[in-house]
Picture 1 (cartoon, helix red, strand yellow):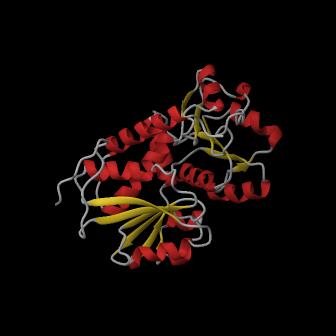
Picture 2: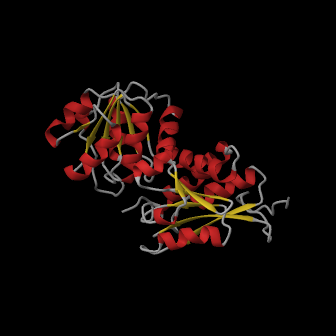
Picture 3: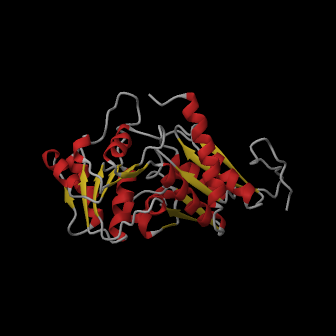
Length: 298
């Protein structure tokens, strides 16, 4: 194995014709934390791998995914807007990816492309890290996009007592609700506060709170001290919703843990090895701290 050529951030190594390549595709993708996190993991695990970011324009996702086989890329992360468009290039989908109709991780199994979705597993690991167990919990999920659907399915499969979904577009909301099976409900605007007031967990899977001036995804008087509040936004680290949760004494977490844990699951899938989670978390924390110094989005 090549000995790493260490840089100031302890994540760089020398590369050769034997170095395995993994990557992320998206549009945009230059902002992605995945190269930082995965390269820190490869360094910590003393693996001769390198992880790159490839900007791929919308409409070219399947073509890019097929290059995984052509160039013997060992694994590929997939972010917006390609999570659905890469599916025709897959030889196989896991049951979770098939149900979600979305792929965020492609494994190259000796030329056979297998589409996975690690978002739900990442979410469950993140809230469990914070001491919240979703089994038997009454849950409310805000949103019906890709991340929301992954969370809804994961909560149902983890044995949540109930899953209620609120979305501005009721049509998309009804589709998302079906992932949670019987007992799941779509919550109307005028019933949302009551649903949250009796819930154990509320998840913001919308972009509300990401940009300055957004306000909170929920009114503060809907929150209570027995609630666990998970906001999937990770930059800024404290959204208006999380600030409100802090004021009412509710336990809470942002989306950094989900991002890190879904990457750790992808690492396991593409390498066949347990992820060095501590190294990944340290790299992510440092990268997010640097972004915070540069100022919030919006």
